[in-house]
Structure formats: C-alpha cells, structure tokens
Picture 1: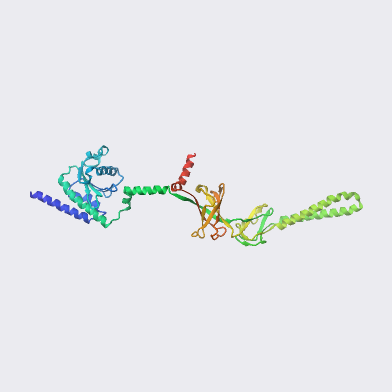
Picture 2: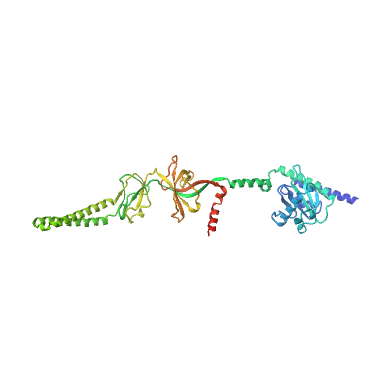
Length: 444
C-alpha cells in the first residue's frame, strides 16, 4: 500500500514539475519540452505536437526540427487530419490503425507503434495544438486521466506565451487556409488587372526641321570654317572645296576662248579681202561663244566652292576632320543647320521590345545629363520597318514631339525614353517575352 502511495506521490510531483517547466519555458522552446520531457511522467516511444489551424507538425520527439516534406511527415499529417475530423477529437482518446482509412492504415506498422493517444491541449482561446503519443502498450484510463491534467497545463502555457508575444510569424499566417485563399484571389485579380504597357529604349535629341547643307559640286573638302554646335548667321562661310582642279580647268578654257576669239577676228579681216571665207565666220563665232560660256561656267563653279549659311541656327555634324580631304559627290549631305528652339526626340526601339504604340502616346525622356527631371513628349512618327543601329541591333525608328510646357533640351543630348502603350492584363505583360520565344520555337 505504501509503495503504491509512493508511486502516486512521485507521479504527482512529476506532474507539478512538468507544469512548472512548461509555464516557464520560452515560447520557441515549449514544443521541444512537450514532446521530449512528457516521457518522464508517462513512458512512450514517440510524441508529435500538431498545430491544428495550419495543419502542420510543430515538433517530434528526438528531432530538432521536423522535415515537413518528408514521406513520414506527409503521411502522419494525413493521419492526424483524419483523427481531427472524428467524433472523439474534442477530448483525449486512444486510437489505432483500425480507426483510419485503409489507404492510411496499411502504412501504420512501418512508421508508428501500435497504440496512439490523442491529447488536445485545451486553452481559453480554444484548441490550437494537439499532442499525439505513440507506444506499443495500450493506454489505460488512469494514464489518460493524468495526462489530461497535463494537457490543460500545456494549453495554458501556450496561451501565456501567445499573450506575451501575440504576433504570429508570417509563415504561419501564410499557411492558414483562409489566408492562402485570400492571397491567391488577390494574385489572380492582379494578374488580370489592366496596366499600361511600357518599354525603355535609347533616345537622342535631333533637329526637328533641319536645313541640309549639301556639296554643290563634285570635289574634295578643303577647309571647314565652323565647328559642331556652333551658332552661325546668314551668309557665314561654312566650308569650301578644293579649287586646284577648277583653276586648271579655267586656264585651259580661257586659252581655248582666246584662241577661238583670235581665229574669228583673223577670219573676219581675211573675209574683207577674200569673200570666199565668209561662210566660216558663223562657225568660228559659235566656237568663240561656246568657249566663252565654258569660261563663265567654270568661274561659277569656282564661286560655288565656298558654301555659306542661308539661315541662322546651330551647325549639326560630327568631327570636321572626318571630312577634310574626303572626296564628295554633288548633292551629298555635309552638315545641317537647325533652329535650336526646334528639336524633337528620336527613339530606337529594338524589335524584341516592340509593343502596341499609336500616334499621340505618352513618352518620357530621361536625359543622361538630368535623369531626375524627365521631359514629356508625344509620339508622332513610327517607321514601317526596322533598320540596323550602329550597335548592329535591328530597331524601329520613332520620333516624338516635346510638350510645349517643357524646357527644350540641347541638340545631341542622349538618354533613355520610356514609351507607354495601350492597357493590357498584367499577365500578358509579364509573359510577353516568354510567349514571343515560345512562338519562335513553335514556328520551326
């Protein structure tokens, strides 16, 4: 009798010690205490702490951190879910493989001992955790009754821990089914939410209506009198062509004219004495006039070798050293003179980034000089086919006009243009390039 009384006192002492240890344990260490130290009161082979609201195994005896995606954890989660749906799930109860569906019961012997015990951890806020114990011997009523007191203490300890730190980890919030459904619905709505398509492309400020200065005749560029981005006035000399060949041509033409004039005058004097030579006068005079016209024409060409500005503006061209000594053909573009207050934006849009664009669509220009102050423009030109850029990228040539309220940038400024297109569902914008790549694969 005294031995039985001593055993009861020992169990009561252990019960009180476990209750005290559970209440004093930190929230993060409490699951480990439950699954490992409960064996001091009632022996078992395996213990599992299961969190009901997120259907997750929180702790397993003898394991520091359970692997949620392991075959054992997946099978045991299905078992605990089925027990939780049973009628006896709201109170402590023993269970075996016979209480499970056949597809789950067939693997019981591989993973667990024969007898299991379902212990809900009651708390004022409800049952959030369940302690499941497993061993080879059957559970008797005295053990279940004793463990029920401990389960209430464990539930109270969890309540105290949650009151001290009420914040729930975001991982647990995401595992809640209702939260998952809400997040999934919001993501689904976001995928089909219409957004404005946009794309980035290289851009440059160019003259809007430049006056092109071309080579007046075929020759070699001899001298440049202006520099790039220089302001010129009407009549100011821009460049000149080499005159050496034309001077030689003028000397030859002048000599031919003088010879033709001399022959005509001599024949005129001779015709006064010999009437038979009068018929030659008309041909000689025509030849004299022809050579005189050639001299006048060459002189005109010499005068045209100097090219002057016909309008006031800024010169637009590259390094003049690239032109010096270079032969040019008549009508070849040498430079341009543009009004600095009349500029527009030229955009090179690569073929792979093409989106649906229309005239009047919004464009923002981020200059490399002032990227923090974008300038607003409107699309007004779109080339019908792509052409190679200096970097050998096939791109479409677009132009945009700056808004009237904007301060016009300087000619030659480079930067990045952001083009806004029509509205499309977000998922189409997100999968635009993968769809393009897939379409190329499917066409082979």
